[in-house]
Structures are given as C-alpha cells and as structure tokens.
Image (cartoon, rainbow, N blue to C red; front, side, top):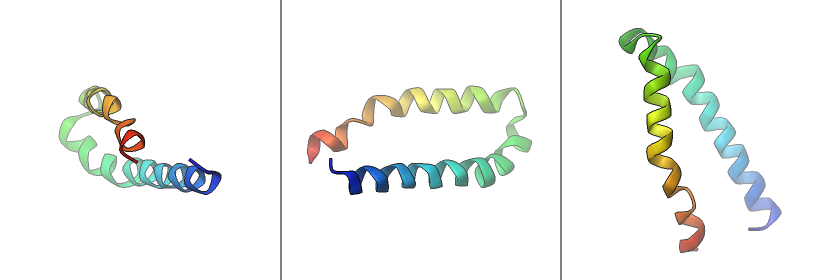
Length: 59
C-alpha cells in the first residue's frame, strides 16, 4: 500500500466514524437505550474485525 492509498483509507474511516457518531447513534440511542448501545457496538466490532484484512489479501 502506498502513501496515497493509506491516506485515502484513513480519511474514509474517519468520515465514516464521524457519520456513525453524529447520525446513526442519534437515531439508535433512543430506541435501544444507553445500556444496550455500547454492547451492540462492541458486538458488531467483534463480528467485523476478523474480516478487515481480507481486502488486502485479495488485491
């Protein structure tokens, strides 16, 4: 991975994190409650994390 690709991917991740924190949490938090939101977020992170290296292996 060259520097341009690395910068682009980190920028994209930052924008997506900002969108989730600013928009998605605002909608989900009243429905699930303050106690369940972190649990769901951590669970989703655990499910997705093993698949993050796959695009690098494919290319």
